[in-house]
Length: 394
Image (cartoon, rainbow, N blue to C red; front, side, top):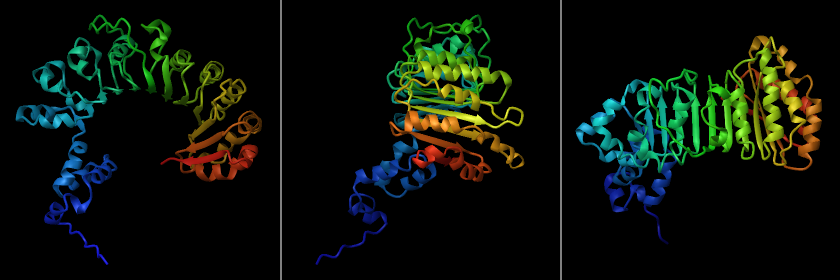
């Protein structure tokens, strides 16, 4: 009988077995990939043995924060690590300008494998004339772009964004000064026929897409299949984008910022577009935010719009509940007053003919008891078929 011998954890044993603890290099690579977001653990593992060093090196250096430290890498000749960069983050505190980056342009352009870029406080005035000079090398590989707190007109921002031909994931967060006309202050690169954005599009915070301000037609959104709108003050941009991607949109998330009397009418128009013109929609997530002044904000708009749905693929409705606190727990039951018609409609139109799911989600700890005690009474028909699911996010 062959008795298996234990493998020590020291460097000599690791070297004798051709890897760490006798494991194949492929298995080590797989294990380290599972820890890709835990930088501290990756650095600790890299000091264990040569095998783990080889498995963690590319993960440790896959994210580059473009700052003064990056420039010091250039000065010290530590340029070999740049070949591992996949995520590029240009933070607000970096205060980099085209003039400060120009001496290191050759090394910046060596970042030829980056697929994700995040820029905080992007300024169209500062970078308007240097789009292609500094970012053309990302054209073949870049698929995801986030602009946080960007400043510039619609034209200057989207001319920067749409220059990347393979962009699949675009997020614009809390844009500042988008209504200002900065074309006179800077001359952004003119793109005659920008490629349409395809994939995921996310808008967060202040944003407006009024037709008079929009410099291009809606063809840029004609291939978007996942649109997420979060806390927008102005809903006109939602309507504009939904009309543009009506034949490709499969997933839509709408999270309003606050309740207001005029928002009810705007949401009615918005959801009417969703259910009558978006032809292949599969999933809708809608946030119903409780407000003591407008307790039914959003709910009535959703109820009426559901009756007009035309997509034969619709199979998942997510209701995100917010605005709860322990002092209004009793009044929160106003949410659950008149869902009988919706319960019957969803059951007859969807649950009886397809695999339909109604997901009720909240991040408010005080709402959990309320949900568990009311959901069965509010949606009895869907609950009896096992279509209702509760989710609690942290």
